[in-house]
Length: 124
Image (cartoon, rainbow, N blue to C red; front, side):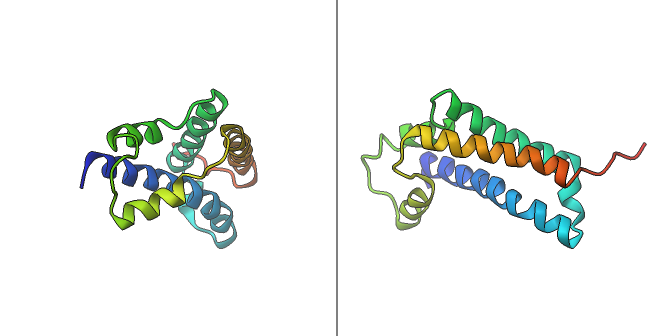
């Protein structure tokens, strides 16, 4: 495994955390899953989405995307099948403004989930 593949795997894990969190929070509220109301988990989820939205608003690609591309030599080498499949899932050929709009709307949803599915109070 090359360093570019490691960055790709980390990027995929972050994306999975972000997307699955959007699904888990409302489902967890419905089914009584305690972890979806945990302060640390929710703050990490919100911070991760905020970083994605802010980078897109700044007109920049995600730093993990940039690192992976640089480490892969700008895409000039042949990746294994799994890496090509993950790349196809993560990287869509759309203008950056589309991603910015999508990420800002998603971050607004994450913030709304704090109101719809509040975190549980810390015990003192």
